[in-house]
Structure formats: structure tokens, C-alpha cells
Length: 485
Ligand SMILES: CC(=O)N[C@H]1[C@@H](OP(=O)(O)OP(=O)(O)OC[C@H]2O[C@@H](n3ccc(=O)[nH]c3=O)[C@H](O)[C@@H]2O)O[C@H](CO)[C@@H](O)[C@@H]1O[C@H](C)C(=O)N[C@@H](C)C(=O)N[C@H](CCC(=O)O)C(=O)O
Ligand SMILES: Nc1ncnc2c1ncn2[C@@H]1O[C@H](COP(=O)(O)OP(=O)(O)OP(=O)(O)O)[C@@H](O)[C@H]1O
Ligand SMILES: N[C@H](CCC[C@H](N)C(=O)O)C(=O)O
Ligand SMILES: [Mg+2]
Image (cartoon, rainbow, N blue to C red):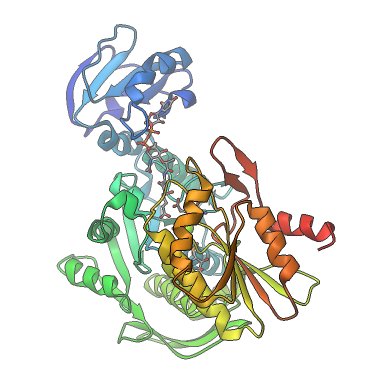
């Protein structure tokens, strides 16, 4: 596509060079530039993309987007007001506005995004509707599935993914929309048909500064939708969002258990086998079952059922779809184990998620709950003592260990978690190495005990200061069993 066409609707301050250059690809990382690419220079928190123009040109860039004055004769230079803001516009131009065609469904909230998107996709599959999926675990465009490195990809990547989905025959795109992506404008130029709000509790305060900013970031999704906003009305922040978006033309649909809502659940049964409830919509009732236990599973089912309701997908597909979704990798995943105790892997990595999974296990645990957990480095520090207190209050024994320490000293993170743990009566131990921590839990487990490995869920790696190592908890447990534990 010609560079000039790519620049449509961007705010150009000045330019030099050939605007008729033929552009074959776009990259915002110099290391990903190839022949005839456009390189977009982003000023980040660690580095400044403008410093990598030489590298980009060496790799084949023929044009660069900058947001500060840059003089170069060898490539076209387009100075815009803000490169990050221009990036989604350029991406949408290059991939020819895929969300004008794709029915895009976005799920936001602190917890339940991945699970809800899996439920929605399973319903769609049962109704024989082609749907692509974007989220924390993977990006699935239909013809291929790749592991994700983030929950919501960067804007240009998103536009490419949507186009790939369409090329593979997708009618729907179902995606998790993180607060980071809303704040950074990664989803600008995405025309969402449906937006879903699961819930809002503490997380990412390092990035958003305070809770109000965090809520406002999430809220942005509901101004981008055209067909329906689906909101959990039992959540106090869901109610705030409802009151703030009520002037919108987009119809609002609420779901809930405790408050009067459009889509509701009654006769809820929860046990260690999962959940069962009666789904109530304005038009029909249906019995829903899921093998994921916990009240939060009812909420995720209600959110997914609400989408199906809006789309006019029959109730039989809702029932079959949610039931068949079975386990979502690393979410309340019970490991197959020939032992008298159980091991559950769960991605709970924020206070509310941890509290929910522990309360859900407490509901059916017959023996002790042994919790192995840590907190990620380079992420919200304030959640650490809070999670320590929750794990202490709701476990019989806790092992504080490392999650992904990233650039931080793992023992410092553990100390901060311990502050909260100390305020409870829980017996605990700190073991920095996560594999050793799991070994300790398995060695002490007795009949009927439940070991919860919280925080890493589906992740198959651990991010340490200087390297990323293989760390799949399913494999680690297998290795430990081979050791004879
Ligand atoms: C806080 C955050 O989201 N940061 C994102 C942001 O980083 P940044 O602006 O600080 O970028 P930077 O690393 O300083 O680099 C600046 C620019 O120079 C470029 N560069 C850098 C080096 C080089 O050799 N050449 C080069 O061109 C980079 O590609 C980048 O464009 O922009 C980068 C480019 O788009 C992202 O990769 C980066 O995501 C990082 C990896 C990240 O960890 N993000 C997490 C926190 C995140 O987004 N999480 C949410 C989920 C949260 C949740 O709900 O649980 C998500 O959606 O995944
Ligand atoms: N609706 C919910 N409400 C509260 N907790 C939930 C809910 N759904 C799932 N959880 C808990 O939160 C954990 C994370 O769930 P899930 O991966 O679906 O959330 P997410 O919003 O995608 O998280 P992330 O922000 O990391 O992408 C689960 O392992 C479970 O313990
Ligand atoms: N999407 C979340 C995932 C956290 C997972 C946890 N294992 C950690 O590393 O903190 C984040 O990027 O904050
Ligand atoms: Mg997720």
C-alpha cells in the first residue's frame, strides 16, 4: 500500500521524502522491521523508538513515523503529533479496517476475562459460528494458534490479527481488553459490537496510579461499542459504569445474581464438581452446568450467556457451549494425580482472584488447604501484603514463593507478602525457589488435603532477572512425582 494512503486521518505536522513509497509492512520495534517497512517510533518507559531508526533502516525501513524533529535524507520521515496515537490509525488503514466487517466482542474487568472469552467461543462453536480469539493464553485466528505474550496485543498487531481472522472465514472476533490496552490506545480503531464488564477489584495500581483511573480506563471500552454493553450489576463499579454510560445510544444489558438484572441466575448449586443454575432471560430459562466450581463461574457463564442472548443464539447452544468449555487451562485446573491429595493450578494473581479461588475451595475441601503462591515483580506492589493476608486467612498452611520476579529481588517481594501473612494465624514458610516450594507442599500433603498452586496458571515459563526459564507447573509436578514424592 502507498505510504500516503497509510497516513489518512493522521495528524501530520511535517514530512520529508517520498510519500508514494510502497509499504509492505509496519513495525514499532526495530528488530521486527523487514524490507520496505514503515517503522513507527514510540517513546516508551524503558527506551525511545527514535533511537533505533538506524537499526530500522538497516533492516529495510523506507519510512519512519516520529513525534519529534528528525532529519534524514535516506527515508521518508513523517512527523505526527503523537506516534502512539497515530499507530492504530495507520494499522487500521494498512489492514483496511477489518472491524468494519468482523463482529468484535470485547471483555474487560479485573478477573474472568479469559474464562468468559472461552465460554463465549465455545457457545459460538456449538452454534457453528466461526470465531477468532485473542487473550492471555493465545491468539487463535482460525488457521493457526500462537501463544500470547500479552493479554491485548499492540494496535497494529491487532488489526493484522483481525484481518487474518476474516481471511480464515471468521464472523466473530472475541477478545480480552486489558486496562493497559485501553489506556495506551491499543484498541483505538477497533469497532466493538459488544462490550462486557466482568468486575473490578484491585490490580495494576502501579500503572494506573489510583483506583479511579483504573476504572475509567476500563470504562473506555463502553464508549466504543455499537450493539450492546453487557455489565455485571452486582459489582459496585459495574453500577457506576452503568450510570455513566446510560446516555450512550448503545443498548445496555445487565447481568447478576444478587441484584435485579436483565439476565439472572437462580437455584444456584456449587460443589467440587462444578456449578449448576437456572439461567433467566427475558425470553427463556435454561439449566446451565459448568465443571469449573465457584460462584465466579456463575458470573462468567452469565456474561457469556448474555452475549449469546444479544446475538440471538439459541439456548441449547448456550447450555452445550458452557458445559463443553470444561476446564480453561490454568483456571481451577485439577491435575490428574494418583495421590490421596489434590493439586489445583489457578491463575489467581490479584487479591480478589486469590480470595475467590480459596473461598471456592474451602466450600468443598475436606482436608487442609496448602497454598503455594507469590507475586509478580515489576507489577503493583501494594497488592503483595493484601494477598499475604488473604492466603493466610483462608489457608491452613501457606508457602510463600516466587511468581515471575522479573527485574526485582524475589526475596524482597516475599518479604512484602509476608507482612500481610504475619497478621494472620496461618502457619507458613518462605521458599524462594518455586519448584522447591511445590516439592515442600507435596511432601507435607496428607489424604484429603488440597494444594493450590496460585498465580501462574497456564504460564509455561518463569521470568527471572536475567533469563526466562521453562516452568510449566504441570510438568514440574510430574518431575517431582518421578523423584518419588
Ligand atoms: C507497561 C506497558 O504496557 N508497556 C508496553 C509499552 O512499553 P514502553 O512504551 O515502555 O516501551 P519500551 O520498552 O520503552 O520501548 C519503546 C519503543 O522502542 C521500541 N524498541 C525497543 C528496543 C529496540 O531495540 N528497538 C525498538 O524499536 C519498542 O518496541 C517500543 O516500541 O509499549 C511496548 C510496545 O508496544 C509494549 O511491549 C510494552 O508492554 C510490556 C511488554 C508489558 O509488559 N505490558 C504489560 C504490563 C501489559 O500490557 N499487560 C496487559 C495485561 C494486564 C492485565 O490486565 O492483567 C496486557 O494487555 O497484556
Ligand atoms: N468472574 C470472576 N470473578 C472473580 N474471580 C474470577 C472470575 N473468573 C475467574 N476468576 C479467578 O481469577 C483468575 C483469573 O481468571 P481469568 O484468567 O479468567 O481472568 P483474566 O481477567 O483473564 O485475568 P488477566 O487479567 O490476567 O488476563 C482465575 O484463575 C480465578 O481464580
Ligand atoms: N496479565 C497479568 C498477569 C500476571 C501473572 C502473574 N503470573 C505475574 O507474573 O504477575 C500481568 O501482566 O500483570
Ligand atoms: Mg486473561
